[in-house]
Length: 156
Image (cartoon, rainbow, N blue to C red; front, side):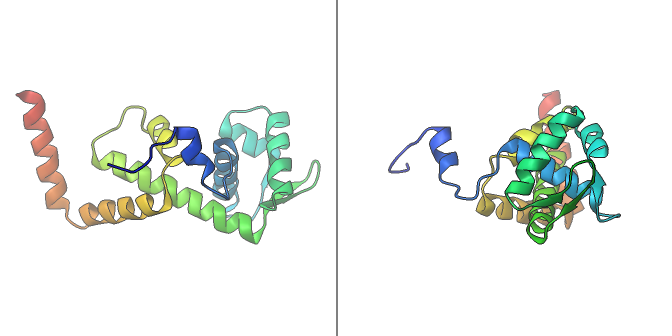
């Protein structure tokens, strides 16, 4: 048993470089949208996140102040080197969590479940989860055995 317990908020305060979950979502999406072209625009970002352009503009301005993007009013959004690195990390985190949930057989509301987990998982735990996912991806026979086990369990 751990020596001390804290509330969720206190655990989250321990992360020194904490972006809000919304900031992470925006940065991840900017990275996704700009991967091929090197940039994106406010309207594309707003549409991808199902928000209004003024909301997207406000968040992009915050990300610009934090040094993750370069943005000019009515212009394009460019990731800084730090923004590109962090965006790539955020997208990879999303994919690891989503792959893990897929391995578990979770298909309904997988995006919602992925979003809930990805914003709270620590780096060490994520690395272990990535190893776990890759272990099973490299062993499809074990995945099939697990799926058969779950099927038998549900039928019992």
